[in-house]
Length: 186
Length: 86
Image (cartoon, rainbow over all chains, first blue to last red; front, top):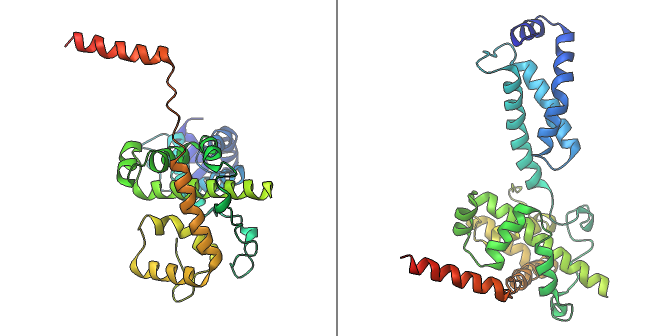
C-alpha cells in the first residue's frame, strides 16, 4: 500500500490501515521520542499524542511530504516541547523533603563548615564528570572555567534560558552530593 | 517558573529559583518576594549559602595541569615548526 492508498483508507475509516501504520511506526517513533524525553513512560505518551494528532490532521494533510516524514515531524515537535517541559518541572530537590505546604520537612544539613575536612573540592572535581553531558558542559564553562553566561552560551550555541536551566540542575546536583557526603560521614 | 500571584513563596519553589536569583534573572517583584522568603526562612538561607559554597568549591575543581613531559615537548615542537614555516 502506498501513501495515497493508506490515506484514502484511513480517511475512509479502514481500521486495518491504521493498524498497519502502527505496526510500522510505533517502534521507530518510540525510539526517537525516547531520545528527547527523560523516561520511557513520557516517550510512550508522546507517541500516543502523535497518533492522535495524526488522526486529527489527516483530513487536511496535503501530502507534500510522505506520511512517514509527516508523522516524524509531529512526533519531534511534541517530543521537543514535552522534553523541555519535563526538564523544567523535574524538581532539583527530592519532593519528599518538603511537607504538604511546600516547607522543608527534612531541611538541608549544614555541611559548609565541614567542606575542607570532607575534601569536597576534590570530590566535586570527580562529580562534575559524572553530571549529564549538557549540565557538565555548562558547569565546566561557567563554574570551573569562570566564563560569563553570554560567553558560555556562545561557546555551546545554546540559549540563555537553556544555559540557566542546565546550570541550575548541575549546581543543585553538586550541592546535593555534598550534603549526601556530609550525612554519610556523620 | 510560574508563581502564584499574591501568595508567599514556599521553600519547594524557592529552591527552584536559586539560580535565577544568583544570575540576576528575576523581575524586581520576583526578587523582592524571593528575598522576603529568605528573610524569614533560615533553611532556604542555608540552602542558598550552600549553593554559593558549591560554586566556590567547583571553581577549585579545575583540572590539574600535570602535562606529561613528552606531550609538552611535542607541543613546543609544534610551535617551533609553525614559527619556522612563517
